[in-house]
Image (cartoon, rainbow, N blue to C red; front, side, top):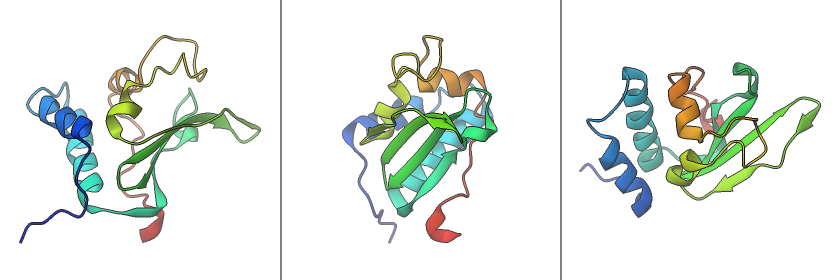
Length: 130
């Protein structure tokens, strides 16, 4: 049997379907394929660090919670801004980082990830397995 543990939100199901075959790089393909697998099969009860703020100049971080909830945040050891907690990947990727007050440029999280070709994304940082 090839049964999944978690059913994707309709928005995320549509996101993954729309992205398939339209990736702008191999890193983008890897990101969407691995995130889909994680969201369907890999629970993260203690969170899953997808992007660490110290791994990028803008100090953006991304955390996956449980199966498909996400936190997008910004900060350093001395100051963290209010986090943006959403229920699915679609909402996280469409978040405008300027509107959230994280950076000075008008750019969504998806555009920002594409701009950096997904550099710094972690696929093996689920705290439940560490």
